[in-house]
Length: 301
Image (cartoon, rainbow, N blue to C red; front, top):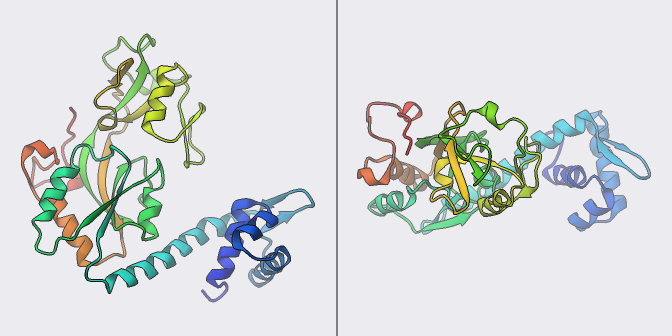
């Protein structure tokens, strides 16, 4: 970067995240005056103000918001490049797969069995993520491949192949006005309280924050909210809850994703194994081998 060094970008992002120079300085383990001077140097060099400062308040300007968004991607890319370079030289490196707990639609065991037959197969380390950080874990190189749900996960900067397509269902407590229905539509959900997922800013939910599906189910049982999820994340349906398909909701896709700049044989071998036809019980959506994965037939259980 001609205008900024990565260290300066780290300084700026710390202040942008904390909106407090003192807390950012502690996080960076540097003196607050040095951090303030560094940020002023960045603003002078770029010719724009990044923060509006007062004695009690710090906020981002529009220029600061833009730099925060794009700067984070830059640092993630640098971190990923370093990790990939280090791992490319390690011929014994394990393959790291990230997914949310229970977020494999029952496919993972079949995929791992298929991969084990590859002549260059490595040990697979499973990493469990929070509700919304799988894409970031892939982009910054902490994992090599991941199982993500679309449209819930952001695929920017990631290559991907669709493994499974399913409907989305609404989960309600027994006794809810929708519990006796066979299906629902999006209009039926208007006015209902939906969860705020931890780590997902700007979501549509207005209810309590939840960190995982187990917490969501508990809150639904207490009649605090309802939820909408891919069907595979709800099976088996917990006692006291009812789930029904949302007829006009866009289908959910389970995808195998990886960094779109990652050309390592380690990754290519796993992707090939995941896409190889297998026994029907794995439920991989390859019933129509001539159809591209993005156009695979909707398979609803």
